[in-house]
Length: 439
Ligand SMILES: [Zn+2]
Image 1 (cartoon, protein in one colour):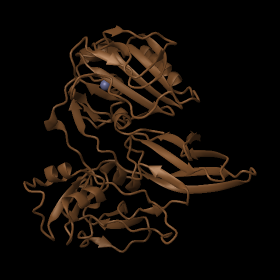
Image 2: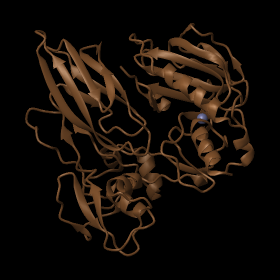
Image 3: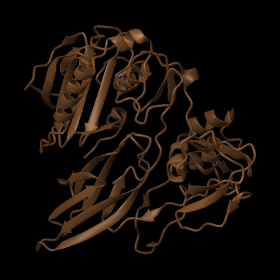
Image 4: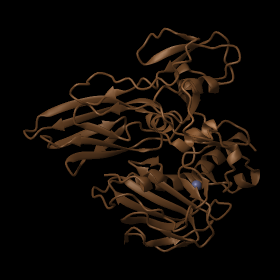
């Protein structure tokens, strides 16, 4: 296959499920870190510290008995993240140290030249993946900050800059809170400002304009955090708080975006698949999608957490949101899957996950029969490959309203439901919305 066709396919397959099947043996998560058990630790306290679950730590360490921890025991913490911030208290205004998960990895560290990074000297036998895991960062981040094009070309004695992930806690300015505190790639970030003596809040997170609404006693805005591999590290949050007299108070802080726990999978593409693609069709369709989700309706239509769009108990996930895909053994794409796929039989009813206005309900060539819902405040859902469309453009839907049926229309090789969500035009993980009520 010619390189252009392969690039086109890679782009397309980031949108859609080409294989429809995700084989667990292909999946490997790359970001994990190590922790040495201290006196008084429990598996619960360790899991909580690192923002993970007992089950995940048990599985990563093959612990048969979660109560049988020994002081000094080395645990692998899967998908460990750094805390962005701690709740400010009047007595604790300085940086708050978090657990140093890799304190034992001292042998080849050299004194730090910066508060935010340290240096590591590459040893014989090191791989970038091992070094990343040891320091609780991801390979892509090490590659980016060290300008390493090929992660397999490390030389002994080479100096690597390592971001200090675990020592990244900052104290947020009083009255400002973030949820989640340790935000990951692909998540939705809620920024709250206490409303007392604040009549208006304006702001930007990185390139995104934030729109604050009154939510209870606070002002709150949503930001979409890109799932793409290069969107990691610290990004500026700039706010302007106006008091009741209209006096502006600027607030600036950095928010650290942690690595997402995206699996990677290699997919074999055939030249027959490439033949189905006309770049002009794909570009026009992508433009329609981008235009649609760039609209902003001020009212919030949804309330509370979203429901699942399927009434199937534990539907099989055939492709995860943000899953990194490589093609025919090549380099994984930068951004990964744009939604979550559920492998369920054709004809399975699909329901609106939350209230909103149906803004697209029509057949598209690549995504098949689709329904797009505008939930307000820059939040959108879309469902692809439907066998039937039951919703009409312009219609208001309520959670649980039938909007279509599962199918395999468009560029799809088997019955499945693809669910994408956007916040401010950025793809976000829909599953977070089913677990957490966003303001
Ligand atoms: Zn998909």
